[in-house]
Length: 125
Figure 1 (cartoon, rainbow, N blue to C red):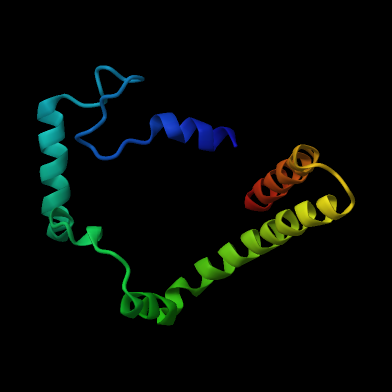
Figure 2 (cartoon, rainbow, N blue to C red):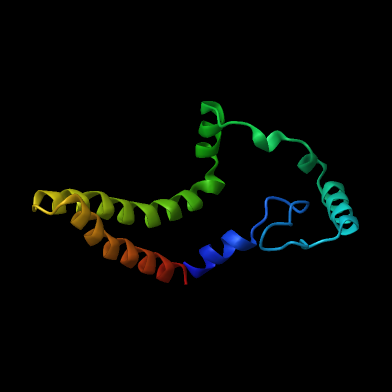
């Protein structure tokens, strides 16, 4: 959780956009930015086009589902998300049926969400 919060402040949109409220000077000088961008584009010229801004079409979705190299990533995502999502969805319904108000139901679901976060982070270690 701390890594996630820390990354909000550390992650930048691109190499040329490192200046922000938290970093008024930025990470690089203008000359260093030009050097880094040129080296990246020299290593892989396809990074210079805006091809990564396309929307996902059904054809691209099917192509990614058929790519067996991505299947382990899908399995990891399903392993981590399904137990958490199922528990969170049904917990609120059960608590509401037991007669708790909406506020109390939301407050009672906080520990389950917290424990899920702890167990998922333990799996990653």
